[in-house]
Image (cartoon, rainbow, N blue to C red; front, side, top):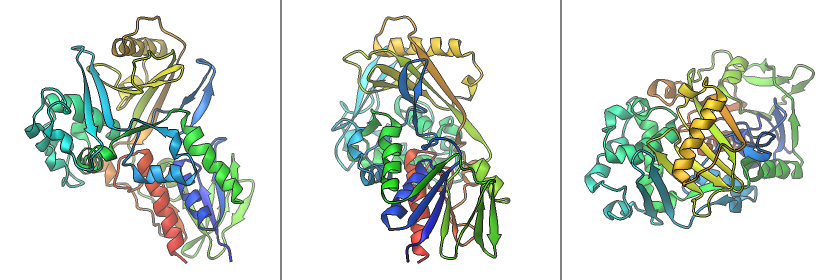
Length: 415
């Protein structure tokens, strides 16, 4: 007999669990509190720029195996666009120097032996100094594991770890940083090709998943906020949505894929991260120069990563708590000045939009990492998913998909 699973939350973690279970012939019901799917990973029409923009600029890498497999499962792997080689152009706004980090396409980090492919003015010993991160424990700080200074740190390690951890790297979890290094720099260029959803996050990672689910008979309800669980012995027996209640039959399962705050409200006593960090994204309606790469790393300025999309230039600033209360116009002008320097543009401020997320990710410190729960719960038929759960990675799309897959696998293992 076909079994039923209820997915609470239609972000990437919930969708990945739903797709996995629908493909395993489960009857899937997705319940989303808001009016759109995708969570932090979604696109929307912005009237200020008259463009469809992403809520945040998310970069995937070819080694993000779960995220790439998820895109493949919904038929959109081709929508993740990137170069054939793992090459990352950079510019230093303070000195004007430009260079390209060329990780190649090998499965080994052979690029560190080639001076022409490394970060300029760095040697092999600089990279070997990163090795303590590879085996660092979860309770250790990045700043205690490696030297957080020098050319390599300023031009590669700091931008990479800031983007991944969303905290100033020295105060971040060395264990989480080590996971990033193992799966990227240490895995060679084959794992490091940058992949961008150039047609928008929703078009590549969200809408096709909804379409696939509905095609398999799944229900997807928006504006359907779970208010409470009804407990039955050691299991969830009922889902209470306020205006209607849904019985959870014996053999059915529930995947709770919501942010940590509502999760803790629904499950009193649940241990979750309690501190979060902001991310600022900005979008400018401007045709990129023909010679501007799709992704440009920026050091020595306010901007960290510059994305070139059709008709649009977008940037990301991680660890951005210092910027969330700045006047929007002032922030837009400061960002645009950096963009003009990085892209070689001379132009007045074009139509723009600033997206500031105060609670973008949990704070990836050892203290907060220790508060992340696993997927199983005290209720035998309830499983957790979300990038804030214990995925072994910081809060990333790859972590979100892994969490959804893990929850789905635990559902499947019950039978």
